[in-house]
Length: 138
Image (cartoon, rainbow, N blue to C red; front, side, top):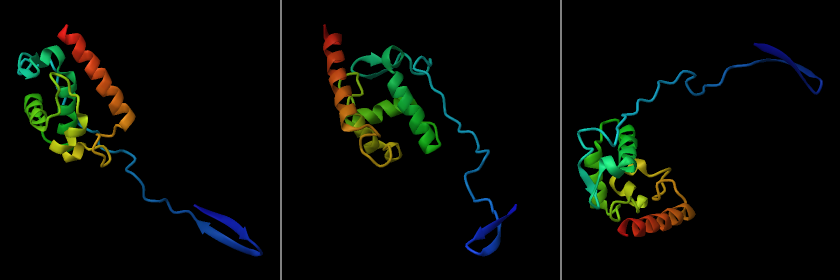
């Protein structure tokens, strides 16, 4: 497409050239879907004496994110074992999300070691997890 443009006393013909941009039809992202109730691990204990079926939804979600980031399956029991080794759990709670990138650098959240959470959010989650831990002991 060409458009006439007058700049000062001079006439120009400008040809618009489309800029290179993102693919208008990007390939769909394929997320490996896991369920905490999958019979392969629903009855397995992952941390703090709790099974995936009872309370493993966050660990399963981390598994799906890691599978997407690494483009290979990362099964929840393997991810839970790795998170335990990184010290990410307090009891059954994933109370130290900042330790996730220590195991999987690509899950660092824009290069920040907090997994994309800010300090205020982490403090809030830590307080909440302590309250939940106290309730579960009673």
